[in-house]
Figure 1 (cartoon, each protein chain N blue to C red):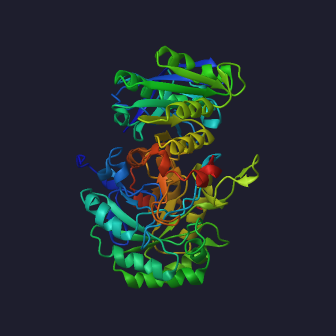
Figure 2 (tube, rainbow over the protein chains, first blue to last red; figure 1 turned 180 degrees about the vertical axis):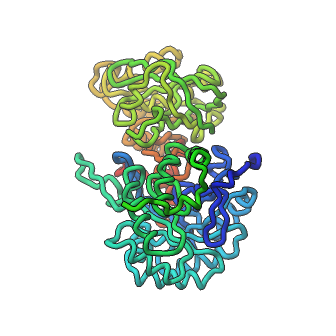
Figure 3 (cartoon, each protein chain N blue to C red; figure 1 turned 90 degrees about the vertical axis):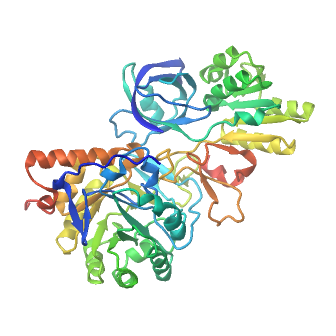
Length: 312
Length: 273
């Protein structure tokens, strides 16, 4: 494999999350970035702050039957169902190749039960080169685990505490927006020991084929992502930032540096880019350059911008 | 695979609803027969996602064309591209038609509707390799046949059997009828079938191929989020040890788009098409 040239990182973009330094706050979001290597031909992975793997489970999962995606206005619905190669295959087949890159690899972890989450983490603990875990307790496209845990402060806190005990690595917990009070759940997870919260996962939605009168996704419902959900995500980051004192990673429809800055100013330490990777595979590079230009123009750095929103 | 911004040289309407988009790239592109591209008009959130279109013709390494039917929001937006307009493109994508399977054998190419876009370069390669080739070309009407590139296929000088659903040109009926007739007559020994078209057509071609014990390859279509393997949205159910086994679903974009017909679980995927 051709290794891209090392890059000069703009020091104004560097951020810290749970003691881990990221060269910049731009992170590829889980489920939209494969296992990272798929992007090696398209972008300079050494320039990227980091990426989060496709959700990894203790054993490989087949995923949901097609159709799995449908485009909506300004977004898309997906119900992939966490098809993945499994934690063991990830550390054996993907991680050795990823160690050749200067980017932070975050392993997204999924299970159908608390035990399965812990089993996946235990397997991944053997893998060298994983910077942190992101606990996926917010996937809306599986009937057990995922959102079922993420919707209950007690269940989310219980799993977070167990996951924290299972690893020495930093623990990020990914929040579901499909709740009445995201702040309440975020607080419970932080009290249980989470080092960082990432938000938001997709918003549960549905599209109907009016000719067949069936849902357009085989699963029935799906997770809405893309620019359409961004204002909801910015609001949730803003709300949660006022409640918890751990770093936040903002996610939801980010497609430009301006979008990323909205989240950072609202309270995010870093951001993840998801759906935009599909229709603009080099978007992460453009956002990094855009953030650099903004910081230069405003003579400010990203950490100083985090949570700098002015009172209404 | 390259990510580029190509310039539209032309975007000509062949007949209402069908267009030929010719793009010029600043970079060399090495496209194999049956490969596709993800395309979208520049700087637009409507539609959001790029659209997967088969490469129809390769004129040289920097000039290629796409034959497409205007069917929805994505192709409608593409139809508005003017000469000189910019098109975001990721290409070439997917595997390619295995021409070598035809060595020492004869080939049948089945093109149904706009599926024709995926097989013109295949026919050119088969002709170049001097493979005895027969094309079965089906469309809804005479106008659709012209829109699906009938004149280009005829210009190849390869034997071609034409059907239209309404009988306005060629034989009346589905393209699978003369195919079945031909296989009944010849038995299909030493034949390879390459097919691209509507799901129901490919399923019928696959059934027919199995009946006559003929090797059959199909190029599948699915709504795609990315086109390069990361969204896992475009899957097709394939035969495995069990429906819940890992590997029960393959990505049309990177595991295909061309598959051996007998590996596809046609009945499972029918809902998606």
